[in-house]
Image (cartoon, rainbow over all chains, first blue to last red):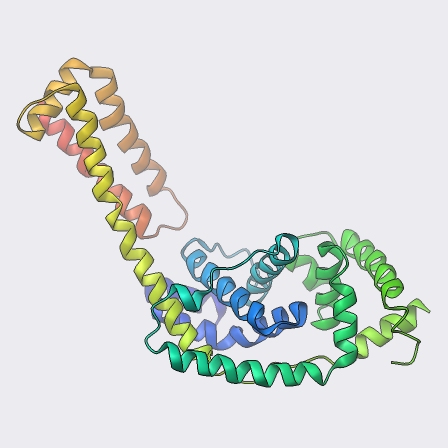
Length: 190
Length: 125
């Protein structure tokens, strides 16, 4: 099923949102996790991202971008808000009337354990991330998309809705700043 | 040196997200929340209706809505035409030409049509 077919299906029958969730929740969750390095914040931001996307689907106008890119865009805005204002999200899990909150909490607990263990195996990544988080958000987003997510310049410029020239100069300045921050950690070997 | 740093970043091993056990329940919860929000919007029509009634009541007091609208029309013809013709007509046109119609725009078209017809029937039939 193509993206436009899936969106049309969701407009007709909102329960088809499960399919979009199945396809894209994991990659978007991963992206947010690699930007925040914190499971609980990631869970909140990811749920907010998908809730916003779900609400926006009836008004989604196909501008030739894929759903995945669109979700990356929403997620990036949410993460940026989180960094800029240390926005505290009202937890979805507290707002909703979960059918089985204890089961949901236990699933979250298991996922947190697994991902915290996974994060601990990547100390070098963590050091870079901690330094990256001290930079202004405009540098964080381009560096994270380029080096943590492996996106090319064309994709990043679509996600961030900016010209490639602007992107290149942000990347170059951001890398210089990050290198200076990483200097005590980075000795050229890693 | 900058090339080395870029190379290091590109080759940096990153945490990977595997299966997420909470994913399915969260999807169900989001679908449930969306459905709840869609339903709750319609409850807004009740206070809007009550508010309209109060507006009419402040200008004229009679027993039936139709008579009240007619009296309001006689007392304040321009304001009545603005409230019961111009605004509903504007909402109908606006929502009819929207590229993507949703439940909200369809609801507004129906409500505006109802107000418009009711006003015309009360005043001119």
